[in-house]
Length: 265
Image (cartoon, rainbow, N blue to C red):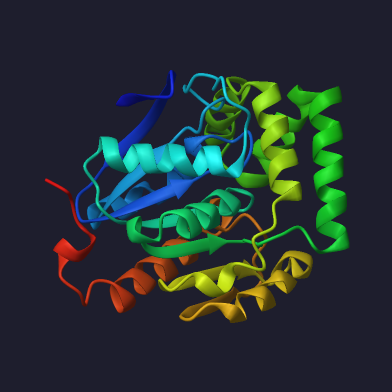
């Protein structure tokens, strides 16, 4: 597996496929393997899927966990792979990192994709879910890992694989990622995002979907509600998720030349 060093931290990542670069950012604890079912997109896109520091195979960062820190790791990934611009996709709380990257490095962001994303934790139920998750992590991380694996994947073999990946996570980094995303708020800055934005939500999680109104500030937004779907779009509803992601990239980006979203070299 390829790796690079950023700020004395070793970051592991997957680099598969060719085409428009697509970066996939995982939520707290889960690591890059949560995007197992997105590997089929490598037939059309270059997938860059990192383990953020403190997750999966990557080492623990000496610096505190912040959205800015994780966004800088994504930039370092693009620099290391010679990628000038990429489509940045964040799942759930990983969307906070994706948004911070788009806001901090707009010249490196070709488009922004958020699956179950939110600019801040505003809904009461979502706040409660965060508090439960953070408490659960401190009291019984093994059982939390089992629940997350089962809630994301139906295949027992994949459940075992993702559970093994999650046990590698540094618990403090995991908790700090929870806490940082819980307090993160970019809702007042969304208006400066001028790249195309795709928002995808499952219709069964209204308390997350209600955050979509914040993105009316963005200049170019496509909102997709996936009927009868839960929050776990990249895993339990991956066929539909991949379809909408591919359609969005083709409709909004592939019309331009590849060089506009391509490599430095």
